[in-house]
Length: 338
Image (cartoon, rainbow, N blue to C red; front, side, top):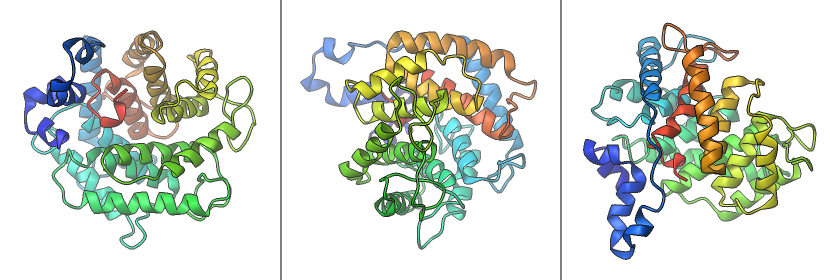
């Protein structure tokens, strides 16, 4: 498995996933095809800020794998923190973040219902917890991850089948839906599919139809329908369309036009950063570079002396989300591949 090779060899790891895949299959490709798009260089400020943020997460994590601030005991927040550590690219089994990664995964697995596969007590917790498991699968040496991930994805699919909107809300039994919870489940499904878990195409199509139903003529995406769009929800929709390989669709294009006007969006700021960075990354090289330059500067200034960021959902969430918005500079997470 490619990811196993990556994390057993530090030299290959620093090449990045795309390069390794290209090396494996280069016999069928020309040099021009292999290196058609050269990776952007990583601004030195990113590494300094990122390592300080990771140090904050490591120092404040408990031995039980969670954090003691607001929402730090929620599997969703623990999952995002684990993703931030994985995204830096060090070996998750023997590297400097191996212990906190393992502790975080232990916490997520301990909070999964062994019968139903449900993680935590809400679909937010479940979706982000499942995403962390999907990204860890194949990277982290832990035989529990695969079966737990399969159960988590089965629950997402079963919940969607029961929902008349073909989408999701707070509970697996919900009969209504919103774009924030739905986006969370959709990204988890894409990550699981990337890792080799079976995800039916129809499940993706149903989720996309819900986003289309919630999109306004100006491209903004509403919450439960065509109510007023905002930056965070539109970034989620743009990302979902991109991951579904729908970049040529009118829905994707008008979502990005809306998003371009919302680059200074302050609503749910760190939550917005997490999704908007991914949306701009997929939109175009220029969109990503413009966004990334502003984001690096902003986060460098707002980073606390402790290395973390404060926000309305607590320092652990704000720090993990901020780091993940910068992690696209590294591109070690499979979900961060274009």
